[in-house]
Length: 205
Ligand SMILES: N[C@@H](CCC(=O)N[C@@H](CS)C(=O)NCC(=O)O)C(=O)O
Figure (cartoon, rainbow, N blue to C red):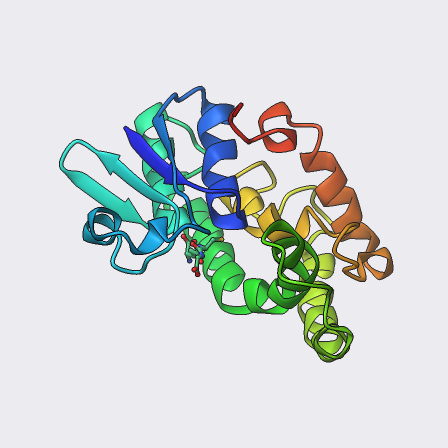
């Protein structure tokens, strides 16, 4: 297996999972700032010009959720519960919610504080952050309520939905996300940090 990555949230989930499952894909770091995502060879694999991308024999996969599901099947892990349709649907619900509701809400904070600093794009835009506050609180209320009765988002145990949702939010303290108002989210994120592969997903460089 070959996994194309650079230091960003979607690759982070996949790298953390690979490490957690004990998979050792060949890692190919993309020079995103230098145009690596738009290089013809890479576009042939992933026409979205985004990371991550997984190549496993003849299979070429993009979308981190699909890559994580594939890795779990490969490793025989129930973090993607193929043997329990009801659980699978629960995980799927949160993967879809993550991409459709959560990521757009968390994204501006992640971009303004983390991505801009990483790529030397100047200081955070205070007006953009002000505007992003209410939509993030709206989604955080939903997540916080579900985490009232469980330490994990789906199935009452660790699944790929946790890694998918937590990827951008794990930077919340540095990115000024207002999660002190949502204690169940803080407990959940701090709990994930106890997982070694989650706490340190990045390959040595
Ligand atoms: N839904 C996709 C999102 C992929 C994505 O947006 N990747 C970002 C990094 S987190 C990227 O490659 N961005 C580069 C760009 O947009 O130029 C997934 O989960 O894989």
